[in-house]
Image 1: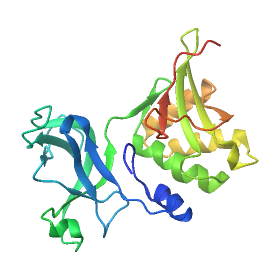
Image 2 (image 1 turned 90 degrees about the horizontal axis):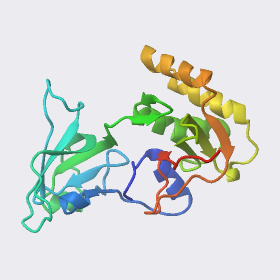
Image 3 (image 1 turned 60 degrees about the horizontal axis):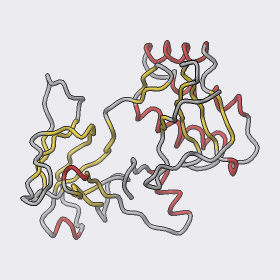
Length: 236
């Protein structure tokens, strides 16, 4: 699995369908693979860092980067781009431990866990932590209304008049649904954060955001269902 956060909810959904999934982590700018999934994982996205291909550091405080930010340097001589302490916009926990996995035996003992973007999600003029939005879309809403981790999606777009519009797409396969309840639950879960987030949620409520629609989430060109999609400007 690649291209989006690997969470327990998504792995559970794949397992219920009879499949097995192993995450990988990489970047085309870094020459492809940066890390590959551990076969004795400590977390859903536990991966082994390919330390012969890249070097990673995390800047200490004070720093302009978010806590846990990854700065990457390429080591492979055939890499198209030479990167020197470049931020890919991600943060993670670096864990050095013995796991007994075959990848450790090959000489890759360093793990990355809890890989997430530290670039916040902005929609409707308000900015929220990506981890909060992911948790609500994958855990809170499915637990309350049914469905799985890819059945809910946040879409931001702009009307023809230039006003922001935020929609929550809910897959029709979820079944009968309290549409107003979905919006209220989403906002309530967001408001459980800091006082600043509560103020931002009130701004959304006053603007009548978000609007819930029963339709399948949008699929990217790479075949993935992203948590937040910036849609083209609406004509209505």
